[in-house]
Image (cartoon, rainbow, N blue to C red; front, side, top):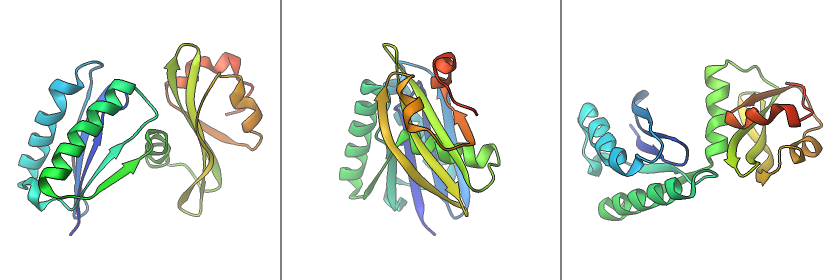
Length: 178
């Protein structure tokens, strides 16, 4: 049985999950600017609920952005300390790819569909990427990008799209057919 501890501090939400033998134990809190106070207690709670110590974890996965610069630094620091201290491998994951996988799972997306995850990057820009879900596999079509909302139009000629994330706040500036 493989035990993977997953950490996300790259968005306004702070979350931790432990995947262990088909079971998932998780903690999630929408708490912008509180990640430093929340992340370690959340990790302790998840491990305690699973009855596991850090030495029983096989790997640590964490989001490496795009997202909040400070949040990404917090995640890097926590993961670096835990992984070094317990001699664990680290798996870096795109926050946009994580959002695309979540959309597939929670929205029951059918095969052969494009997914456009977007995060509001502030300053009139968005973080975005494009993925295609086909035959049960998520493929990257466009690399994670930081652009104006209008720039998304030129990279998204295929359809239909499932559009997810708070970057959709700029929908009036995008000529996309969801």
